[in-house]
Length: 156
Image 1 (cartoon, rainbow, N blue to C red):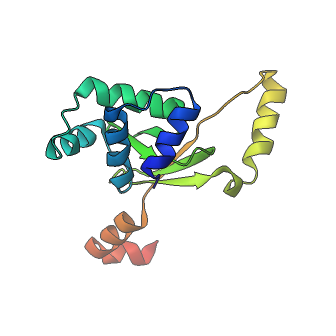
Image 2 (cartoon, rainbow, N blue to C red):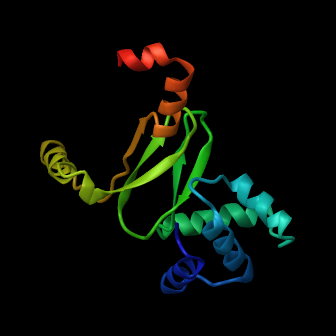
């Protein structure tokens, strides 16, 4: 979870205006647990009677994404969701069933840096960024499957 003040500080440092709608959207993002969609932000804004329109939500998400404060993840359903992120490079593991997503710091993927250097060497590309999303079944969905089908769970 990212604090609203972290977002405001990054906006200011990035040369962006810290407007009232951006401040309110940052607060809503800080209150979100796990992944969220633009529609969920818009609904929360309406519940709070902030008067923020759809375009403002999407433009703010674009700015926050450019500052690495939120990251868009593609869900198995084809929808897009966002995760609030500390402004440090990391990757995500996304559940193929429920869409829950968890950030994984790059340091926990030990061999990835070496693999990227090798790809760069072989392709002669100078790699300036990358994005990695891993898909699998989260512990909650695994437990739900085991509860529904105990025979299969014992065989795996």
